[in-house]
Length: 377
Image 1 (cartoon, rainbow, N blue to C red):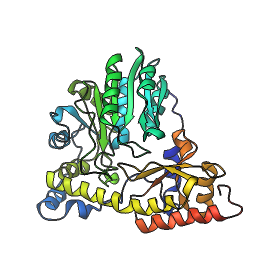
Image 2: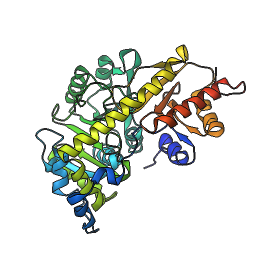
Image 3: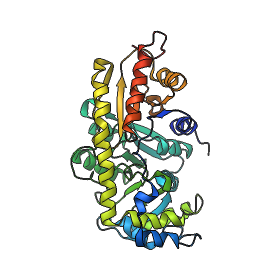
Image 4: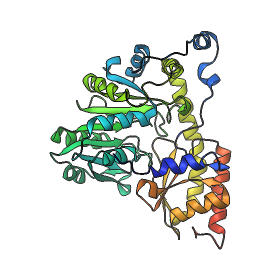
């Protein structure tokens, strides 16, 4: 098994703690432990927690708390993992065999595609369309799915566009999966970070008997440091995935297990989600005003969810040149679209500090204005 380089993760991990202004992140300003736990009984329960090995698939209490997010689910439908990345990894590893076909709805976080190819699968892209506000072409999807299709992978809300699939598109994806008896893996890690409306993005849970939902605390909860993720799916499959999980991290931490159950208590959960939505809605206007000043140089469909904006670049030079110049000369980190196989685009995260976001955008303007800029005008 030969794993190809994961370009975006390596780009971010090398540079995110070395630049002055990082606007590559796709989550929101992280919560502190004090904000999450507070004091009183919740803090005392945490302080007396024995730091031994936890139940490796997650405690029954924690899995039951996650199951409440999926109507009709129980703890038997949930496997806890070390972040959403491990949830995606063990699911793909367990389901995909050499020679299988995987339909990958793009753009998308590139992990599942890379793992599937490493496992010997043929990966067929189905592209979301900007002119349709990043919805898929149902005809293209139907053509892509064949009797050999083992898995269809989607991300909803979408990374990097921030788009939310329409109910019609979701039903069409389920029908396409059903036509081949394929598994449907829906990465839903941005659910809860809605910028528009008060409703949470609909889940693929319950729409199709072979739907698997992966998620975690890294994006919509502002708790990436806990490394909490999960898989929600049919109980028999979840039990199978636990066996694969035994060969990776084995278990996430006992502290994270306790904090997950705490964070998902209904009142606390509601406060966390409201905090996230407040950050997304409060910071986006800073970016929107900057985009508006650039006229035809930038195309953009405003994100419905997630603290991420996907910008089409129509200026001179390549986005990769721009990203490298920003890194070297302005100490600003962005994500070039080539890392999503869309080289004419830029991903900018706006969920962290609004003042730093404004400063980073000003430095992009400085770069564009420089006569010697590789990216430019």
